[in-house]
Length: 289
Image (cartoon, rainbow, N blue to C red; front, side, top):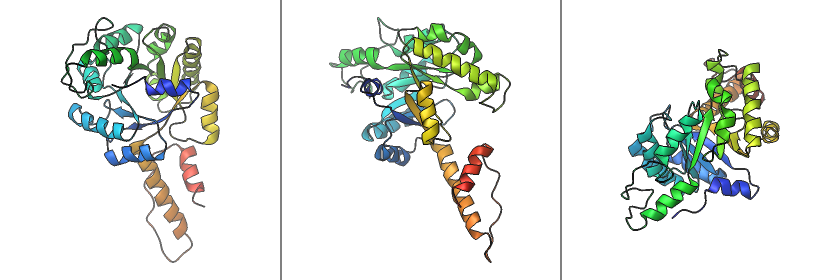
């Protein structure tokens, strides 16, 4: 049976855990993460095609790579998705678009066994070791160690951040500015004043309630931006998405060759429009010269 939740254990030892968002579920990329110093991974099932059957095999690769498996569920009210992610082996669930403490309680009912929740029992599961005799031990571990991680990406959730962070079930949260910026009418401007104010409010509430925050400069990690996030109160870092990280490398490779060809007798077609903000695109070009 698994021991204490490794993310919380790392924090207690003064370590800063590092993770990445996985949209592809690709086993080779997951193994690379394990070989290069990452500590945890978030498998997305909200926006990607990762399904319950594929999730089990993905969890096997994650375990073999020494990573802590988290899953972002497709809907915080989808009790079946919550249960199946945990049955596959997730040690924590990211709950998208949380608005109220009632949202978290409903997810807790689906995630935890009685008396803590209302989840039905079944020992014929990967997470339970397919074992009838040890199922009570698994249920006890699940109720004490599984993380429910609300995502603050809705204005209503930001308004209710104090109540949510005060909940016993909430030991870790995420501030997700993307959806929040859109819902506030700011488009992709995740640095807009209202988004920044929401960030400060969420970070302050987390600090008051000793709740750990997952965050960091996901698209442009540098020593300076990582240090700023740490100073802000981020204690669990999420740096990168597998698909966008690969796209950024592809844009870098094209920019490098195009720059190298300039001034020679050879030529290259113009690169397609970039997918990243100008400040990131500029760093791609500058790094090639």
